[in-house]
Length: 311
Image (cartoon, rainbow, N blue to C red; front, side, top):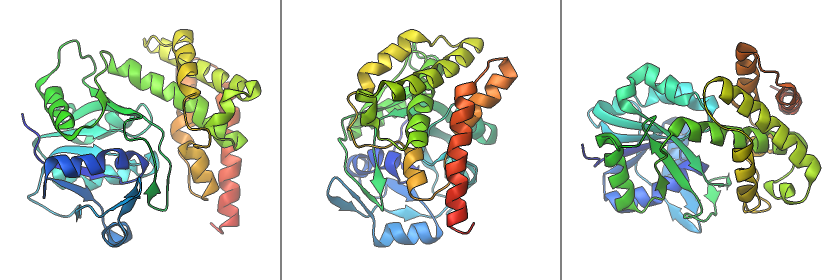
């Protein structure tokens, strides 16, 4: 298996981590962005500006046939996942592999339901990138993409194929021995940090000194850990403590995606974060009072945005 052609859907914060290096490493015609309508026009006319450099990547429409990719990277938000699953249909060939690097713990299952597990690898991102109006400034080596099979004690041919293209393009990555544990760890951190920042209106840097904010963050994380334990995934206090060393290294003024969405009057991913925790807690008999407060508090802000915007 060899990856020569890559398609990216979602040239936002997460997509910007991949795009410049894939375009440079793969060469002309081998990397393209999938978009249509107004978004396509904007990307072709304005491009994106990443670390001071303006890029106009090749853009193809979902309707294009006969140009299947060897690798599809899905870097959309949860609110756009269903549409993105439809849009990548013509990009999927017999051996195409899909990395869905978006937040959450259920996106791979949704993509696999449409295209089969033989096309889907587990993946998630560990990097903080803020994009506003097509502009992002970030350390391209300050994080990594994690990917692999469910278990990776021995690397499968398709994992090795993705590894080879990331190596050749200089994309930082990690292959977790246990990808489900990695996904749930990232989800736990996201729920604690993303939801707390959104509800309180604070950047990541507040967690460095404010123990009231940290109390909420850790309590939300513990609810996720309790659900994970019920599902046989071993995360808990050791992983919460491990994250303490990471949270203090994030740029002080960086804001998580949910807070950015609220400030821009956009629909948030609160249903994917705290909403999922509440639903799984009900199914597994785990009480989730902190996430219930986070969910409903953020929904108040979201609906107020809608009211002000006349929606």
